[in-house]
Image (cartoon, rainbow, N blue to C red; front, side):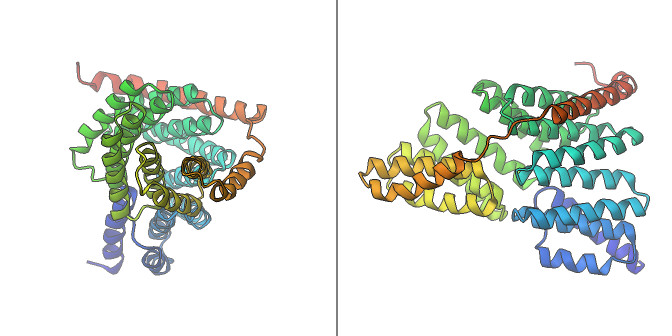
Length: 354
């Protein structure tokens, strides 16, 4: 086996694990970036791995640099499909960093390349991304519409990875719309797919997490407590900062409702994780819960710093979607739909009859 082939095999294995939520540490990924500089394709793979490694710890800017460089390296190697995938990862990183308009720009570039390659799977991921942008602008119905369209396309092309991903997006949308039965149904479908050899640790934790959130809203507090604690443990075992922050915030809110003695400590820890992960919505939830916690204990002076944080967060100008960006979103949806209609006739005859 040549040195190049050995490195290719190693990078393929590591990248597959990274894409399933278990990347290596950034220092190790950086070594592969250095080793692969002479080969644009291998360099793109190493940079993708580095991007995943940074994103796992919510180091958004470092992840964005790596994904952007990966897209360019793949293009140099003539690997347009891989380049498109890196653009999709770059867009998602911008979205996680609360920059939906920059994410839109990258999804537009990705869709142009996906259309040229007639890649319906990447079109599905663009649809999922558009839905997330709608969430940022508080349009949950539009987000669900995009997630359901993505799910329909994933089923049509018989891609269980994309189908499982889309089902979790649908579950999230249905949860925010307080349609809990539909959300639980989507979660159950995703869980059945996880019985296949998908091995995505992040998704496995997300399934438990959403069940916990829903059961909390349904008043099943003890069950929600167990599920959210389990989700936190799963994310901790995978060292996923984003997941830990979400699960611990949800757990703290449930503990507060149960008047548990450890509610304050859990919420303070969740607040720190939310700040590290850079998730303003979680920081707001933690502040509100801590204020309620201290007021219930008649410790108003301890609530004052969180009132100040909450006021500062709520004083930020509300993000509104401009006419230009709304038009860009509509264009992305239309172009994705066109690609779907072009490809579906070739796919439909091969679908199983239910």
